[in-house]
Amino acid sequence: MVYVDIHRLYRDGFSKSAIAAKLQISRNRVIDYLKMDPDEFEAFLSSLHERRKKLDPYQDQVVMWLNEHPDLSAAQIYDWLQEKAGMDGGDASENTVRNYVNDLRDRYSIPKVKHERPYGSVEELPMGQQGQVDFGQTVVNDQDGKRQRIFFIAFILSCSRYKYIECLDRPFRTEDVVHAHERSFQYFEGMPKEIVYDQDALLF
Image 1 (cartoon, rainbow, N blue to C red):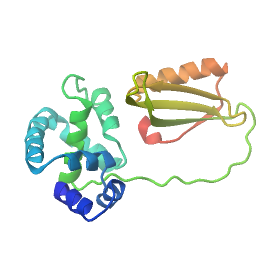
Image 2 (image 1 turned 60 degrees about the horizontal axis):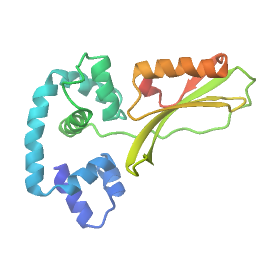
Image 3 (image 1 turned 90 degrees about the vertical axis):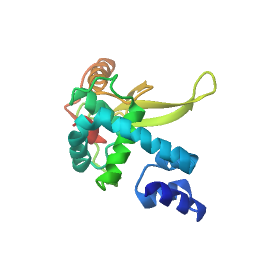
Image 4 (image 1 turned 90 degrees about the horizontal axis):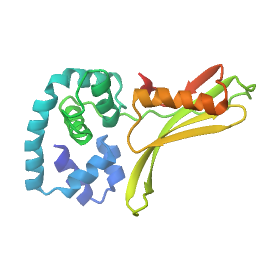
């Protein structure tokens, strides 16, 4: 059981990041499980039963997505359930979906895979030829000093390295990405002939 393995490895002196890499799970999951004593974990398992009832109609779809794209985040699956599978946003929270996805990964032995990014130099491109789009996230302090996760999309013109960036306090959805493209073109007063996307699994 993952819960037992996490606590055993932690007692043996492994760091949270090392445990996550060894068990091929997220570091946040390691942190969550380490906070639970056995009784709390049993209660958590019971709550999973209720979550399954809410999300089981989408189980086959989620398993298919995980098999096709093992690197998918639970946040992306949450968005896809609303955008592609017709799930109402009130049916389940993002946290509920994350726990459900983690449970499915365990049950169907689908570890989260991190793809190594290939790097290489490219020849200098002419102005207007290419733009690059990348997604990212970071944690910042808000005005009250509390830590908050921020998600961003960045547009970069390959020749001039001119940039346009938008941020949200939640993961980007399809509609957000489309409108961000439109505003970036307005900002640049034009659009490049081609656009290269990093993390293109987010665009499927």
